[in-house]
Every structure is written in C-alpha cells, then in structure tokens.
Length: 226
Image (cartoon, rainbow, N blue to C red; front, top):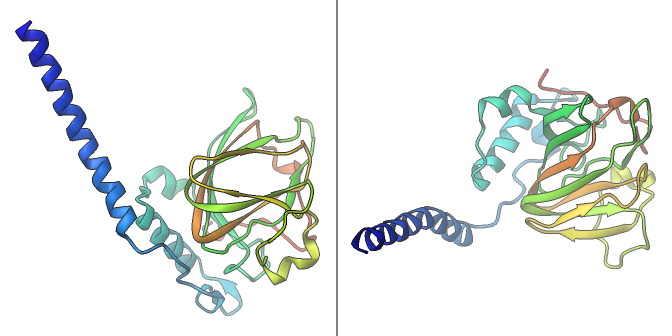
C-alpha cells in the first residue's frame, strides 16, 4: 500500500509540475497586450519589390508573440508570397507544407496570416488527381473563413485591392481550435485574418499545384524567400 500511495503522490506531483508551465504560459497570454499590426506596405516594399527580410521579420514577430518555434524545418520550408500584387499589408501569406504525398493522398499545411491579411480567393480543381478538399483548424488568433453560401450580415471590410475579385460573401468567424471544412469540392474560398493575425493548420488530400485557380487573373504564386 505504501508503494501505491507513494506512486500516486509522485504522479500528482508530476501533473502539477507539468501544469505549472502550461498554466503560467496561459496566464502570460491573458495578461499580454493583443498582437496587432506592426507593418504597412511602406515597410514591406523597396523599389516596388517585396523585401523578403522585412516580410520574414513580420512573421517572426508574430511567431514570437504566440510562442511558435522557428525550427530548422520551418526555416528551410517556409514560403512567403504577395501573389505579385504589391499589396502585402492586406493580401499575401506565409506557409509551409508539412507533408504533400501524392502516393498516399494526404497533405498537411501551416498557414500564417498577419493582422488583416487575406489569402486570395481561389479554388482547387480536379486534374490527374481529385480536387483538393480541405479542413482548417485555428491554432492562434482568429480568422474569417469565407466560402459559398448565403451572404453573412455585418461583413468585415475586405482589402480594396480585391473588391472586384471576390465572389463569395458567406463567412464564419473561426476561433482557436475550431475546425471548418470546405463547403464543396472545387468551390471558391479564402481566409481573412482578424486584427491579431492567425496561424492555421490545414488538413487535406494531396495538393496538385496545377489545380489551383485564383479568381484574380493577375495573381501569380511566387516565393520571395527563394
């Protein structure tokens, strides 16, 4: 009995110790000022080109606030794009593929959006592979998740540069750990970060880049970190 009692006390002690670190982290997050926009297009562009160092610094600031590690994998696989539209403050993203396996048909993606930053409206079409069907889970911050459906009232003000290239007006405000699924295969959709930015994990079947279609015909995916 003494052995069982000692083991029980030890387990309680370990649980308390484990909680103390997490609890302290949660308390710190509650008392910190909310993350907010720190950069504008005037900071991001130099001679009309997106400055990769400033763009990366903006995301690293957000990583630091939310306690997201900048691991070697992230460093070696991160991409940053403004879709060559020159409005990175409002339209752009960073991200990385954890896995994109055509043989076994599965995909994992991390999406990083700065405060008030929008991924362009787009869809994923069938190619030699089925159309990409995706689900999104918010890790930090929150976002407006736009898709097909009845227009949602009290919509946020979206980036003016994209007003002629948005066809969906139904959205859900997606908070931490909420999961939202694509409404319908091959349907248009996009994400728009709230004022604290957002970090989202995406789950899907294999992503064939040839199936990606932007509503804005001027958009081009390029990685400024290459």
